[in-house]
Amino acid sequence: MEAPIFVAEDVLNRAESVEVKVAKEPDAPGKADEPARIKEWLESIKPGDFDKIDRGKDPDRPDE
Image 1 (cartoon, rainbow, N blue to C red):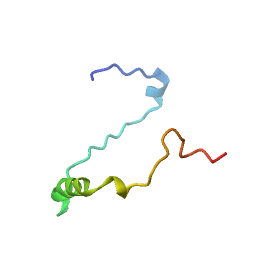
Image 2 (cartoon, one colour; image 1 turned 90 degrees about the vertical axis):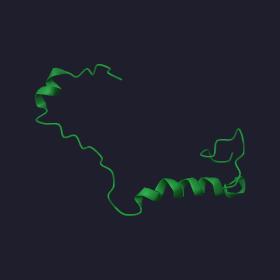
Image 3 (cartoon, rainbow, N blue to C red; image 1 turned 180 degrees about the vertical axis):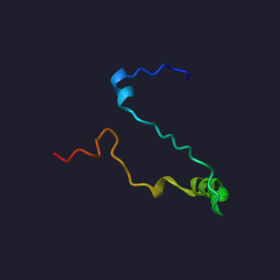
Image 4 (cartoon, rainbow, N blue to C red; image 1 turned 135 degrees about the vertical axis):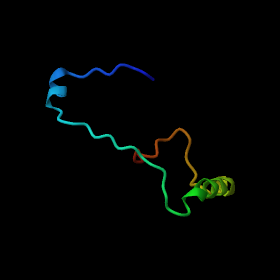
């Protein structure tokens, strides 16, 4: 995005270091087929696999 980041100078002065961790590709066997397994699962699900929702009703709000 190349957007500027603004930080108060005292924050920079108090920061001793910033550690950035970069996620690396998993080396474990079987991880390469995860996208294929996910795609297979997505293609196999049906609307009946999900609970019915009441449209227009907040599921987190208790019944009145």
